[in-house]
Amino acid sequence: MSDNTLNTKQKTGVVQTTGHSWDGDLQEYTNPLPRWWLWCFYGTVVFSILYWFIYPSWPVGKGWLKGYGTVDYTITDKATGGTVEKKDQHWNTRALLLEHLSEAANDPKRKEMLAKVQAATPEQIAKDPQLMEFVRSVGKGLFGDNCAACHGQGGQGVVGLYPNLTDNDWLWGGSTDKIQETITLGRKGFMPAFGAVLKPDQLDDVAEYVLTLSNEAKPSEAADRGKAIFQGQVGGCYYCHGADGKGLASMGSANLTDKIWAIVDVPAQKTLQDKKAQIASFVAKGVNNTRIMPTWQNRLSPTDIKLLAVYVHQLSGGK
Amino acid sequence: MRHEQIETNSGLMLLLILVVISIGGLVEIVPLFYINETVEDVKGEVRPYTPLELRGRDIYVREGCYLCHSQQIRPFRDEWLRYGHYSLAAESQYDHPFQWGSKRTGPDLARVGGKYSNQWQVQHLNAPRSVVPQSIMPNYPWLLQTDLDYSDIVGRMRALRWTGVPYSVTQAEYDRNVKTFGKATADLLDINQAQDNLLKQARDRDFDGNPSRITEMDALVAYLQVLGTMVDFTKYDEGYFARFR
Image (cartoon, rainbow over all chains, first blue to last red; front, top):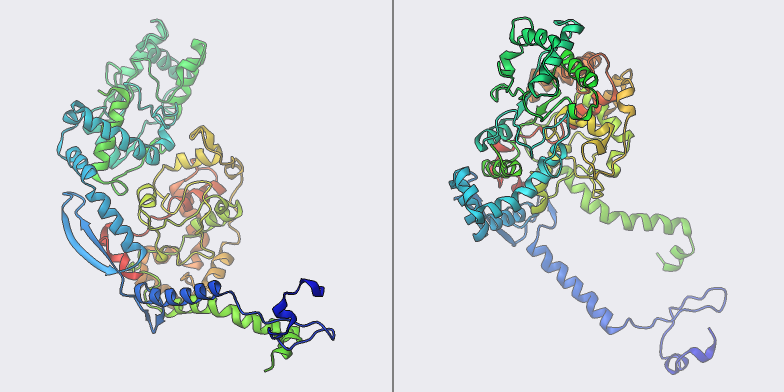
């Protein structure tokens, strides 16, 4: 640094040097810190001391200083929505969360709407446009977080894996009550494997008969043979699918008479041969441990489940 | 000591710098070892991983799942609503290393156990976009094709035992586990039965949908399905865990 950049004060030697000298002539001034900076520093010291008193701070023995700050929260009964207990606890983020949750639960508008959902029957909800608007907006979030991973964002499902919730076909029943039951308890789809029971040509015949049920195939001799297996003791398909092939909601068995295919992707196959082959190979394998709907009762509250059931029901127009 | 002596002796200065900067860390970390309530009391509900789950966890780490997925639900309202109950220290007390984190390219996985079926997990790991079209997760097709290497399971459990995870070798350790976790769980934590336990769980539960093979997919899905399921939160009132902080 050349001399002419130093100010007058330094030139006249008012400011002291640190007394060190490097390389013979290199010295360091001890200019005072700027006032504003110094006061900010003192401010942070005062702030930290106040902080120790308000928030949890120093470890002491096997515990710690919990501070004078407190968080008030109310514990609400999940079933009735009423206040069970009021708590006043030293400040911490977990208590703060409970405060936020109880504030949210006490958010008058939301609370009022949730209480209405809880009190109303599904039919009453469906008739109330304001309530349905609430169900659609809350249901969309719940569905996105919990159901969309399998059933798709719009509920369209994946053919062969996860049922489409937007059509009018319901394996386990499409009433709001049944949907509610399905979400609460989960479901486990099952169909025995017929590969060992039926011969390949018998499987073919059954497939042909199944295709006639939905008018995919025309009546034929093969279909008649298939019918005998379907309706008789050999195949026994009618136990679950019903004599008319319309399925039983209590068994979760598919309706074979409509054009909606939950597992075998019949519409995607071009020729009758391919359609038959797909069905025959499916009947041979059956369903075991591959179509499982998890239970949600430990994850979602009964009100959330009811709301979701109404939401899912309206996706399809419902049954 | 004169300032000049420190400033002109780089070895000494290095040592003193280390002392000064470690004070902050020591003051924050060391008390956690002796404060009683660091790890919440969940009455023995959290157990170490079974041998199969442990191999799944190792695959989780090997594939770098933690780079996009955290396993730490923080006590905020939005996280509570999306993922469920906030994570407890007790829930990762046997994790070495823990899988907490703040980098979420994908969703948090702390409570993913039981949320989806095994089949969904297999399908999703194999080809994520076949079930979630907007997903940016890579495909992991080799998990289904690679047989699980469990030859070193005993060594892996012994290493964890050395860090304090209560896997048992001796009869005394086994008895202690029976007392803490019950007999069924204690059997699963017995290193002497590790390989049998691994094979049994993989065969009984058949996580990957292919009963004829034990693949890496079996192990990984077994691990994912247990995440966040050990503590039964219905047993505790809402304020219980707030008392530990």
